[in-house]
Length: 147
Image (tube, one colour):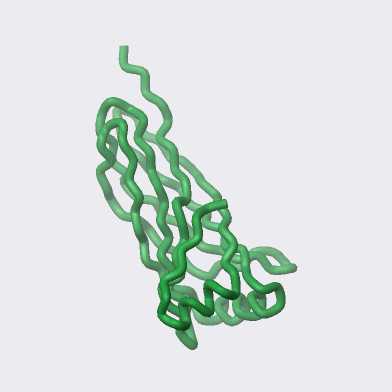
């Protein structure tokens, strides 16, 4: 009898691609692991990027991987470019100046088709320093692995 294990979704890294006056370009890289002996299909993985403020969390961007096949007993890292929303970005920059960085939280749900189907929620956080923002302003790509 075939025993199936739950796939695993983790945040591999978040990379700052560019900083503009009215937006922040990020690349969010989720990793989806298929520990089973048959292929699986990631139907989609919608996610939202938040940052923490003293009054809670603020949404700054969202994205989706779209449909991707994951080979048996394998994993895949999916780079997804996202751009921040204008008003939330201003609050994020105030946070960077005040604290020397900001903590980004990525929340999403992976919908995976297999012999059976899964909806796997995930939440992970990554800290972005003021230095990484400066490097992005200078045209250097900065990446931060998950915590």
